[in-house]
View 1 (cartoon, rainbow, N blue to C red):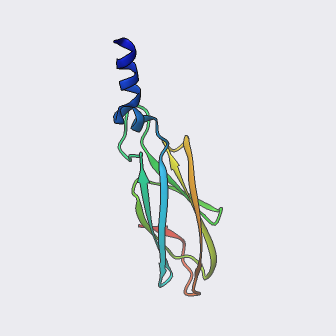
View 2: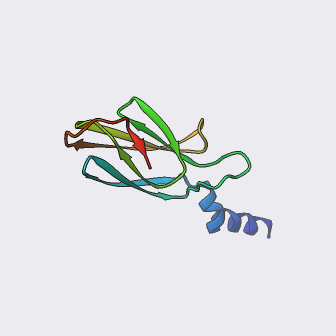
Length: 118
């Protein structure tokens, strides 16, 4: 009987879900110098548990790094030219799940500003 219960616990959706690594899909579009990014996350939450608060680590052109707590965001104020954004799924601001995506895109030349996110 104990073996059957252990096998059931290991195969139950709750136990399987807790052990699964997060997944990340990224959709984006560039309009009028702004990059609209939508991250689709599975097996991940931005809600704080005992020791972690899920965040996304966003690195712009290997220069500027920010941490955000939302799946959709906008980056404005990039200079015209080729850019890349790395998105990494984090347990907290110091520990990564090892899940990341990188996107590259072209921004039309316009007036220059400091990159900001919304």
